[in-house]
Amino acid sequence: MSAGTTARRGPRQDRPPAPRPQPSLARAAAASPFEARPDVVRRRRSRAGRADVLEAAAVLLLVGVLALFLRGGGGSDLVGGGAPGALVALGRLTGLLGTALLLLQLLLAARLPWVDRTYGQDRALAAHRRLSTIALPLLLAHAAALLVGYAVLDGLGWTSGWVVELWRLWQGAMPDMVTASLALAGLVVVAVTSVRAARRRVRHETWHLVHLLAYAAVVLSVPHQLSTGTDIAGSRPAQGVWLGAYLLTAGAVVLFRVLLPVARSLRHRLVVERVEDLGDGVVSVVMTGRALDRLPLRAGQYLNWRFLTPGLWAAAHPWSVSAAPDGRRVRITVATGLGDHSARLARLRPGTAVAVEGPYGAFTTERRTRRQVLLVAAGIGVTPVRALLEELVTGPDHVAADVTVLLRVPASGSAPLRAEVEQLHRRHGFRLLVAAGARARGSWLPAGAAHGGDARTLRQLVPDVRDHDVYVCGPTAWTDLVRRSLERNGVPAAQVHDERFSW
Image 1 (cartoon, rainbow, N blue to C red):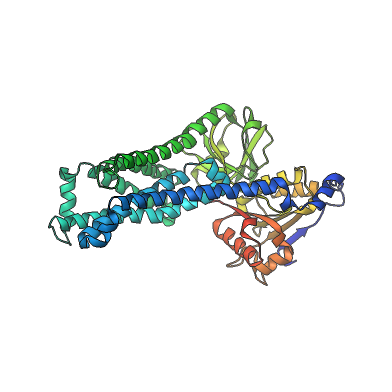
Image 2 (image 1 turned 60 degrees about the vertical axis):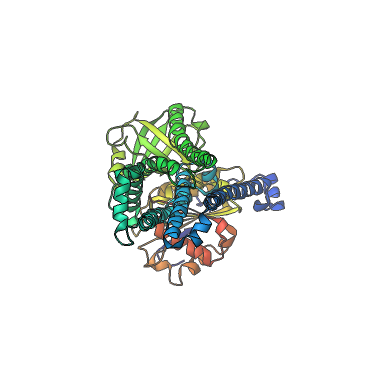
């Protein structure tokens, strides 16, 4: 093993060995590979089926928008209406497509259970952000093309005529233009504050408050869409379908972002039981409540936590559970140096009420496709990994040789929950690798362990890595490097599951 990396295999000699699996279970495992088990096959097919339905629905929405455009004569206007007419037609088309993508964005952020179980909220929100880079430019193109096209048709000229046209519309020629302009301005503000460089400079609470402008912008845009133009306003059926799409989206947001979290919080009545200081700026918050065995929470998932105390109640933050749910308590482990909100958790008092949204996330054993599992964690990313590990090693079909844990820790050797992982290792005898030391430049491993390249080192540490399901959690850039090493070792993408700590 390279310098700075230690490995532990099997239980310590001064402790009894881990219990062996029941003979009947061992025979069943040998006779039927894990990936061929009926429950595994059923889960895999269910995810694939849900993905097909969701993606088909998105495509159908876009096709329907194109059909609206063509039904209103947009095709002929685009190719045979001259330059001004083509601009107006282009403005109609980009407005329809941009609005449809905006509705899809809102649905991806609505915490729909189907979306969460199929893709996980981190991927859904990543898709939400990618769609914004398409939807907003389309809506800006919509406004620009229509203003210039109508300005030329009204004899105002190509260059500055759009300014006069906009002023006329604001003055009353088209009453809904004021609200439409405010809606577009609100979307621009949301987009600007969502750029990664901007997110780094604002508090999460501020960013979240600004982000609520997106909902206001969507509401402000509705009168403009239902009363202006030929594609929707000119057809009662089209108006009904369009308004239905808005109501469906609004209903999903209200149900899954507001009503369900409120009902779940009232039902389980979580309160802080204690706060444990783990040292090195890390605390664990242990909570208890009512009927927690009925909270649909799995190891590896997270909730949005809102602690109902001054300084914390106004914003909900996503933190993964750091222990496998046992029906009695729920625990999160947080690095307090990541912001004012996190730092205040160390001062929580027992009895503080807690409201929750969730649980969310597909970083669970439900996505497992192979008997062998590799868990890779860095920094505070160990929290969901530690919960997954506990579930894996205490589950009914656990065999110690099936699980390998690779912890990436700094040169000091100190890492959140490391002592708990090592205690589980001594008790259950899975394989534990600890990669300690300063990280090599461009590598996810310490300098002393990456002489032959990350992919080769990983292959040396876990020779049969391609036969594993791999769960990875840590900083985004670090996780990307781990995924690259896995890809170079031939691990199929379907066997790699990650959770990224970013917003």
